[in-house]
Length: 107
Image 1 (cartoon, rainbow, N blue to C red):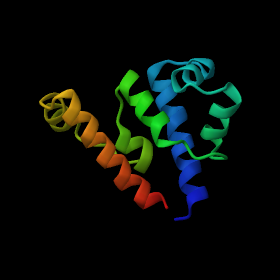
Image 2: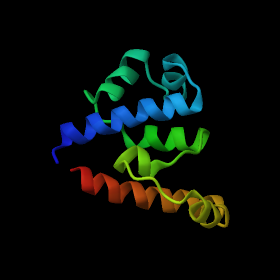
Image 3: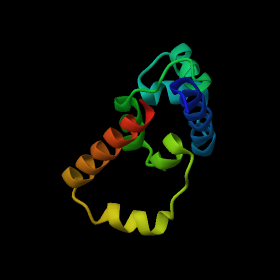
């Protein structure tokens, strides 16, 4: 699958995450620290959502990163137990490693 197609899929799922959080477009743009116009580009897949923005969103509004990036939902119960048992430093390292892996799949 090419990068443009993946970017559009991620953008579509980003919009779903926004709706599941009950956020307006303005709210999501603010959480991500971008303009409304830039956020809309992410949602349309016109611009690739950068890793640092994904991590900022996760840090503020814990959600299923695997679903956002790959469209796969995980068993949150098991995952939550593992994540909650980690220190903040371990959790940050784990998420960073996971994002590096996903970035490798997107390129």
